[in-house]
Image (cartoon, rainbow, N blue to C red):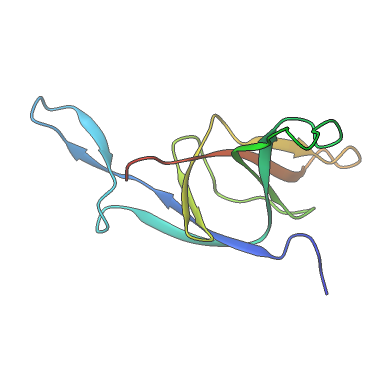
Length: 120
């Protein structure tokens, strides 16, 4: 049994629409978005507070999640995308980090910071 990189998610990318002022804006409607299934992921909570120093009265708060692709793989994820997994809808926070393989220089994996989307 594989303990890491056994999770899946769906990358959701907004389409575009034109607002009343003629500006191009993101369109998150079901018919406008591009959905891409992703697999071979490890998704773990980001927490505030060091688990080694939290005492009985201490509280750890989930502040978001880290998404990482398996070694040797990347995924079509960009800033502004959303990621759906385990009943959560999250937004990609900043640009995904591409980690190069030190021996080949090609991408080894990507790491993405996710935060919960309050309103969809």
